Length: 562
Image (cartoon, rainbow, N blue to C red; front, side, top):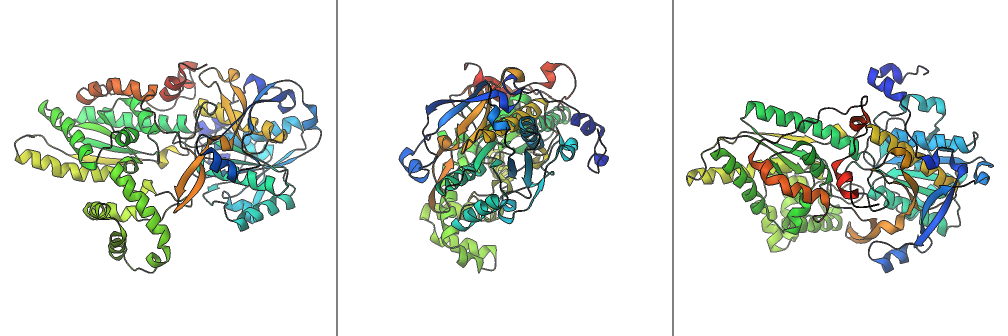
């Protein structure tokens, strides 16, 4: 392997991981020229069909695509230029998507070229890119991070931005654009695909499903990349805490885990580590639990353990919990609209107290009272600027500290009433960014490489408005199936920044799904006993049953499916 400035800074592990050869699905091994795109049935959006169809008249209803064995030499005869962009937060395996994309293109025609837009979608608007050559790619294979071309959260949505994106791609003679991102980024990919089609362009737009949150999936997208690696990283840290708590036996650890709008990460880490308490946002929403009821539930277990002399434990809290509490969800929805409607007025206010008073004056009475009752720090965090997609920045809301503060008050009241005699010493943690750029697990290294290679096949076949789909993931990588899913098939209408907009619907934890049902069977036992498991670090070398281990989530979800 050639020495570059990049791998002069590499650890020995990274150096060896660069040499790892991902396993391609058998269907792709001969290259894009030896597969054929087989069309399935016409599709429709998961909800709001009429509204979504109206907004995507040219790309709605397209069929699913499955790649089958065959010959398609025509796609290799003419050299093409493909561009790739990384959009949104980082996820382990992004570099392998690019590597698979590059290798797939070069396998079809050595003259094909791949360019990477720098800094996310803003690079498309600024025509800021660089060519990704096999030599450049060498030292990034199987490594974590997005540092090859970086990422960004710019959203291309205005008429001016859409026109600029198309103009820059046409001017640089780009044949296809591959967008690697989560639900919002791939919604944007769908918008671009429709816009290009409307304006008579044959530039293809292909999406790749990326998010450690695990909320971009369906029957054809069985998991998003990065989820496997990130949950293994978090589980190692939580497992270490479990071992520490079982050794010291004097602290309650409250651990908030990344997952903006779904609790998949928290649930998966719970399966891996068996903590005493795990809050699942989707269950809180289904049961319409209030903050008070959540505190009562937590306090009940803390008091019961204290009676056994166990003044310690581990609590897992999903990052987005606060948005699942119905009263908080209503408050956040109202705040989203108010912040959008009064953006100019709020910008001219000097301090947080003035902004809070103004917001409270505009809220309905019940929501105003709730806002007033929140700790000052949490109220301030709820009023922070939204991200470019209109979402509250839940990673900045310290929910675990809110729970601890309210529990202190609750337990103090119980102690005064003679119902609690324990000690409540706490330590809080937030594990988020620690998991986003880790060296991808063997599963994610294989999966992302296949997603990229598959995206090359979709692009070379002129597919527009599709998401790269690699499935059958509970089997060996060689047996994975490949194809594409129309982006519009995953969409519904949602309220964003005060307006109804088409977005890819998030896949939440299903309470009747096997991952949650298996957890529900065991949580009472985990609550009162020390059933902790200690997964340890990701294993890159050793027996396949360890190195290629898949998540509990994927195993449970696909157990009864072909």
